[in-house]
Amino acid sequence: MFAHTVTTTMIRHAASTYAWRKFIHFGTSFSLNILMIQGLIEEAALASRRMQYKYRMTYDKVSRNNLDMVYFLVEPQLEPYLEYLNVHNIICKGVQSEICKILGS
Image (cartoon, one colour):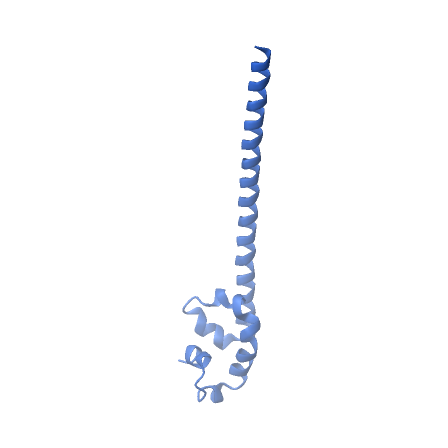
């Protein structure tokens, strides 16, 4: 009888400890994922504001399609092209590049 009581207590403790660990693991993972998503949203908003400040004409064109929030994904790669487009707008109209097709209207 004593062995049964001890064994039952150990099994209950192990099961509750396992469940508690799973709960803590899930709670921690969920919280960290929410923080990461919030960080991505903040970075997207900051990049959108940078584009609005630095490249106003381009921002006006891409914000109509709500593409300004994805700018942070390609900002380093697009920066030289955006500089060129904003400095040489007339020359850009003659260039048959994809960026000019997307941004020109």
